[in-house]
Length: 193
Image 1 (spheres, rainbow, N blue to C red):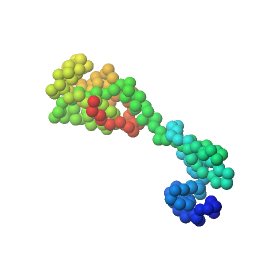
Image 2: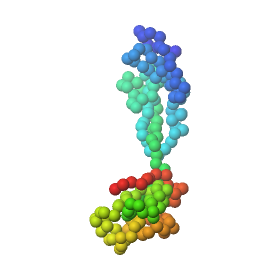
Image 3: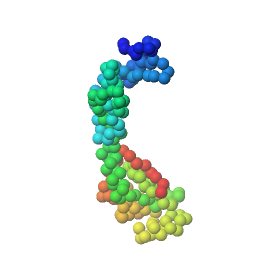
Image 4: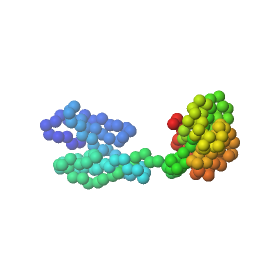
C-alpha cells in the first residue's frame, strides 16, 4: 500500500456496496482508491439520458482516481458518461398524448357515475382536470358549450366529449385520442386543475 511521506500510515475502510477502499490520512484529506474497476461497472448501466460524466485521472505518483474533472496536476486517461433515469417509451407516449388531447372531467359531488368515470381514468393512469359544476356557473357554461347540455359525468378528451358513464365509449374515445391501454402506461394520476 502506498501513502504520502510526512503523513501517518493510512487507516483502511472498505465499503462492501461500492467496491471502494478509502485511505484516510487525517480529517482534512481523504483519497479514494478504486479496488474494483468502476468504469466497467458503469458501462453496464446504459440509458439514453446522460446525467454526469466521470473521468479517470492519473497523478504523477501513478495513483488513479475518478472525478468529474481532473485536477491540474493529473492527466485524464479515460472518460465515462453515467446514465440518468430515462423515461420509458410508454411514459413518453402518454405524456405526448396528454399534451395533444388533455382530459377534463365535469362532475358533481355524490354522483356515482362520476365516481365510476374518475376510477376508470385513474385505473388507466391518465391525468385529468376535474371541474365541479354543481355551484360554478362558469364551469356549467363550459360544459354546456362542450357537450351541448348539463349532463354529468362528461369527459372532454381534446375536442371529443363523452357524456354519462359508458365504459366502452370512454375506452374507445381514449383509444381514438391515442391514449395507451392500461398495461402500456406507467405514469400519470388524477390531478386537480
